[in-house]
Length: 305
Length: 281
Image (cartoon, rainbow over all chains, first blue to last red; front, side, top):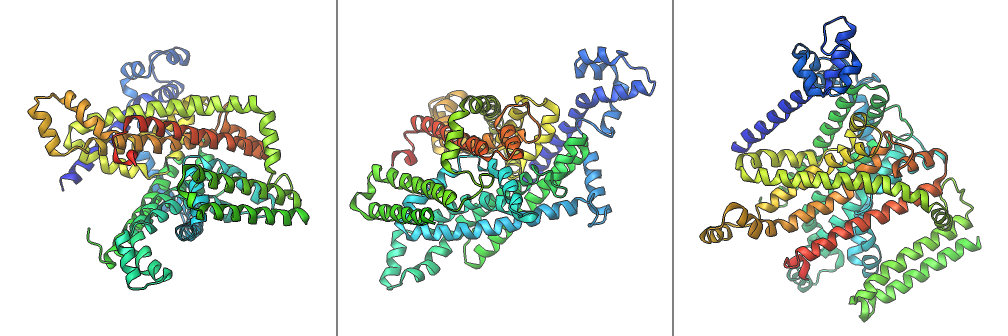
């Protein structure tokens, strides 16, 4: 309860800061518009205003402060503008409409989930191989670890174009990017998890004369699940980033990344911010969905937190 | 066809060599532990080369490693310029500012229990969001040059670093803090002599996570607009011209820069936290 109050206070402070930041960020645009509309503005010409600091302009033109939260194309849209745009483009638009954020989110989400499923599946398989084969462990594992320190997302534009040139388009190229971004965290986490049983426990299974596959299903796999879920959460966030970045290079027409790009081409800041929030909400929803699944699975397995 | 069979042969040979090494009594030594992944890497490169040549794969789809190496050797000046623009200015500048700001914020937050309760969940939440998405906004605000890339990096590294540092500063237990109090140590004395050293493993964890994030942020931000230099710019324009050997050369640079950056931070960590169990092994 005490934490909730604290979190709410911090969130309120962030929103308040945001509103305050809108004033100096947008003041120049507001004053230019006001001058064109014939209002009295000090100093009078855009050239003189350019040399003044934003705070000086605010102090001289206090009448314009209200306007800074209501511009059509502000440099920094106010929170309520973003909220209104989010509401308008999710609830009020038909889902099939090209301007509905739900439509774009669903395009990105399907690529994310497909890629995540492929990446996770392959990652778990490789981890099983690594745990059971010394050669694979020594040859592949160092590369899997190194791959986490390099920005492999830089491959994204090339994958899109190469797959396009051999005739693969649509959801698959984005899913490939999502897959390899979620692949490596899952491999590393799962190997750690499959190795987590202590030698006492492994020895006990040996005294029961359990073979390797029994040891895997009854001991290694169950004890790896907490590690698996931790890396799944990292993996799905990376998958979403991959799908969004995968929409950039081809100038895709649909998806949250395409919304971001279109917004930045046409200076539609409110559209950029609402796409950004949609992506954030999507990421939060996916991660917390995994969190709920983790709780349910671990509870069923008798883990007490 | 001969080359394809040769590729298969090389693969089997590499695998056989590695399994001999891995199952030999010497497999615990440091040299073998470095040799095995190296053999694996070289085998993959050779097989790649042979397959591309043997199956006549078009250069547009997958250039052979030798072609990439040749392109790399020819375009070192361009690659260096891109490296300086993206890594040295954008990523490193943002990394220093972002991690510094997060560290100072963490110290301030740590003084108030209320703030810590409020900020930690928010920070954890934000650290999981696709923050690269702020790139178009920041490019709009700070212009096309490296300043906007540094800004993206600042936003990306801030929260992971903040969360880790705050967690680290809580690492000391009541007994240790009481001991400092019986020594009549002031806040800053106990901070520098007890709590900061105890927090260092967490701080370095944050710094290490941030190295990768910094490179990702700096490169991806260039996809949204950049001057005519920079790794992200070169990747996106070379992809447009189907000059994939250049793209691969840039990716090699990114990989080298990423692992060197991470390695450097890990080295510094080793010299600062030599006392920690994870480093004594």
